[in-house]
View 1 (cartoon, rainbow, N blue to C red):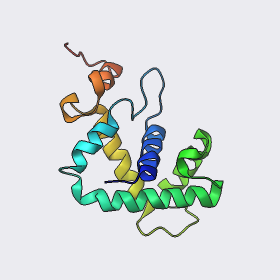
View 2: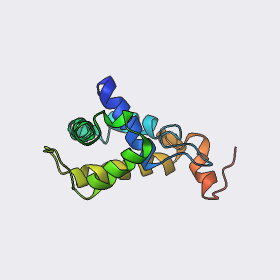
View 3: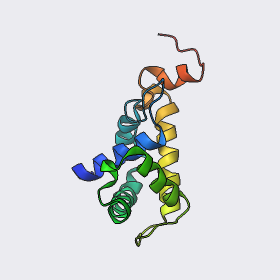
View 4: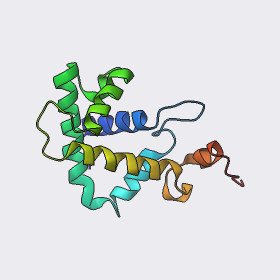
Length: 136
C-alpha cells in the first residue's frame, strides 16, 4: 500500500504527533497496526491522499532540511510540522497541507486511544495513561 520510504515517513510523522514520554510513542502504542487495518476498510479511499501527503511532507523536509522527514532531528520535525499545520510550506503541495496534517492527527488519535480490538492502543496503554480501568 505504501513504499518503504512512505512507510518510514508515516511512522516518523505518527511518532511526532504522539511522542514517547512515560508511555509509548504513537507507533509503538499501536497506531501503525490500527492504520493498516483501517486502510484495508474504512480508510481505503484515503490511501492515495496519504501517499501524496507523505511524499509532499518528505519533499518539504528535503527542501528545508536537506534530508527526508524521517531523517530530520525531532526538533526540526516539530518545526516543519508546525509550518505544515498552518500551510506555511515552501514547496508546492498537490493537496492542502493543513488538511493532510489534521487528517493524520485525527487518525493517529483514533488509533492510539481506540478500543484495542481495532488494532491500536496496544494493551490498553492509552487508557491506562488517562486513568481508565483496564480489566485483564
